[in-house]
Length: 328
Image (cartoon, rainbow, N blue to C red; front, side):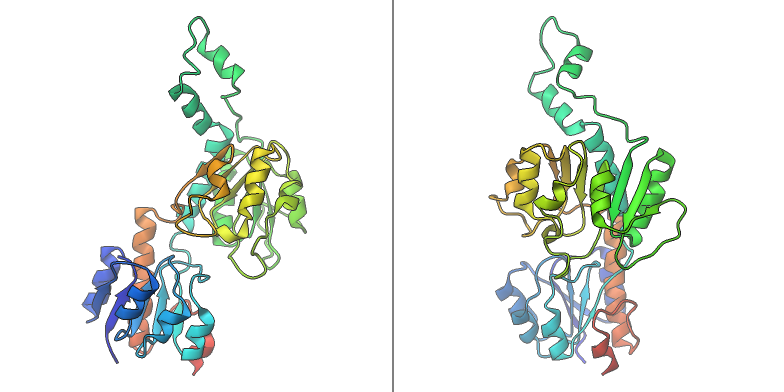
């Protein structure tokens, strides 16, 4: 069996070192475009993929490919059907960046609630430099002071590892937490579990989306859902871009239907310049950084590398996506 592994993008040194220690030859792709990946995958037995697409064309161009290790949790960027048809095992890494994403969500809550970005723009554009006016008066005029998150209600849609960490992080901040998850039942004393997503939208001051992108969750949050939210409420999406309908969110922001949003993920990544959120009001846009702290990236790289090491030793990787391949 070939011991050559294609890294579609660089991974952290600790993960690369783990592979090299076990005798793997690493090939780092200079680009994530399909033709480059097809050419480089022809003699590899393993591929480590981050968030870029890994379509059928690449998988079918790799006759020796036996395992695809996702450098993360979501596998919507991998053609799972093609991999399974070819007998290629697909693995992923769970919980390696959950804390980082949870921290991002709490940071977004505070940033949105305290109007930090609008306040920054006000002071940089000179609107808070009027001669003869007091700074407190100008802050009041432009409503730049924001609100405390103490006493507010956070609604979490999707109560997996990230959602449960968020609930723990906001507990000392005296934030009430309501959760909705169709599949997960919790008896945590820190949260109130509700029966519908609508209840989350209608009652929460902050709503965070923490579900995977599937056929069921695609465009889960549309204008109809956003209209159920309070006009003073904020939406946070650090999950997957396709879950929130971007044009609907932009319309809701521009129309004052909700107070603001923080968006870290996009339906097309990197996001296109004509993305409607780029021109929307009161939105914080970040480039898919929620789960990419230095600590998380190292954990993810080691997890993906360990999956390939385990597989080549005849051991089942920790988190297999298509177990029917392993059974064969």
